[in-house]
Image 1 (spheres, rainbow, N blue to C red):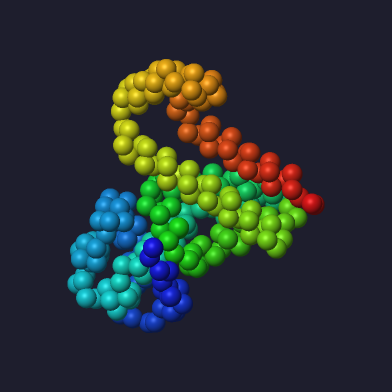
Image 2: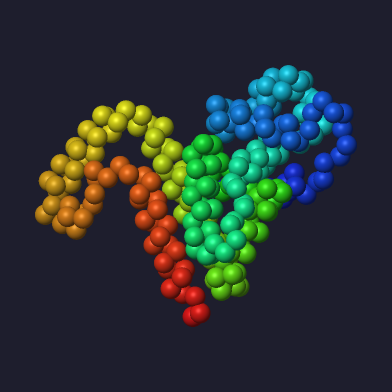
Length: 230
């Protein structure tokens, strides 16, 4: 199991450099490259080429790819709108934030992986976390329950978005997907005697990712709300 990194680029403030490059420019280029190549396809050489710069010049701004991943993840998180209309109830505001988070992760399928493998301490990530925590504190959570609620909601969205992106990347043909679901349904029906609950209740024909996501989020929020004041 890989050991966590003892450091992150956010522990080192950016020093004044020549105006040609900056962390911001590197972050934007890294997001664009990751959208095309994915995490495995990002290299310092490819990133430098996208920036029309020498590979070694990047090392004046970052120590290596892990720093680039930190920058890219924070740049993508910046796409989540943190403005909340005055008077919006905490649950509605949280739902709004989490729906946007899923949308961002679908636009950038590499993001859930990076979020799960590094501390999210960049300025945009911290601003999002501040809003997120504030809404749950407003609802009445604190201490271990607050931490658990934040984690549960975060991991639900990350996991759902990662699963959805993986499925969509492999199942691009709607007719092929429908045929696979039909055959899976028939297979499960043949197992009805040994797996009666699955055969009766599993909805293998349901390809509504949006509806499933919203229903699952509602169930999680119901659980959080039911525990308020206990």
